[in-house]
Amino acid sequence: MMKLNTINDLADHLGASEATSESIAHRIYKDTSCGCSASFDESGTVERWERTHLRTYVVECRVSIVGTMVASWRPLHGKRRSTPLPAALAEFLGVAEWDIDSKHGLPKIGSDWVGDSLENAREHGSLFMRGLKADAKVGEEGILRKTGKGTRYLLTISVRETKSGIVRGPIFSVSGYCEGTDIECVAHRVLLPTSAEKVDEAISAADKDGCDLWMQTHGCEKCHPEGTCDEWGNEWSPDGDNWIGQPVNPDCAECKGDGVPV
Image (tube, rainbow, N blue to C red):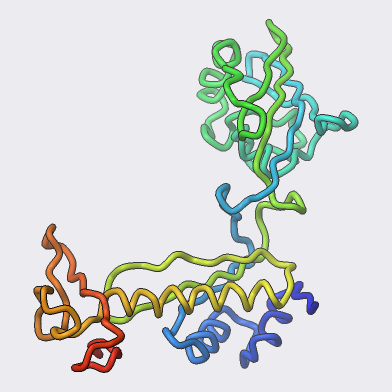
């Protein structure tokens, strides 16, 4: 199983002329049936819905006049630790990246949501902590348990992460394309390092999306006689905002199942 660690590895695997996002995109566009679009982001974010691992942490919080600070954290069945916070946990607590490694005290909850220190102290101080609810169930992302009062609290929190715990890093993204329609295909994203097989799977899935969309929107006038089509084989949508074509009939005698070209 070939491992791809960097954009150079990715470019070599795909046969791109250069290790750049533009060159990789050009290569994939040429090599796919539907002309997929692709990109590479050196520091992309893995969205929550893309994360498949749920990890649970116990977080010690201290409330003061400057807001609520993260004093320490530990895995549910691990040893106590201080900063740096795991990326997904910091994201859940709204702790800004600059605040995690700050030399001016403990990181503060909400520093990524409210940049002004005085406003953050008002928004995420004692009232915020007293009103915080433990409303998540086991197997869900959220606060599972809250204990403590006054200036000290313990929060048991489950967050969605990648297997490695990294939620930002080099991301390869590819999505299908269908000429003649404004409908967008879903992006298939892969976080590096990864295997060559994972990249190939993402490209194949994106290419299939584009081809499927073509078959769903580019039927000719004779594909389905009940369709109301213009000269390009497109059917006017009920909302009047977009042209939506009718499906291709693979057995159509007129277009031979190829649909209407654009």
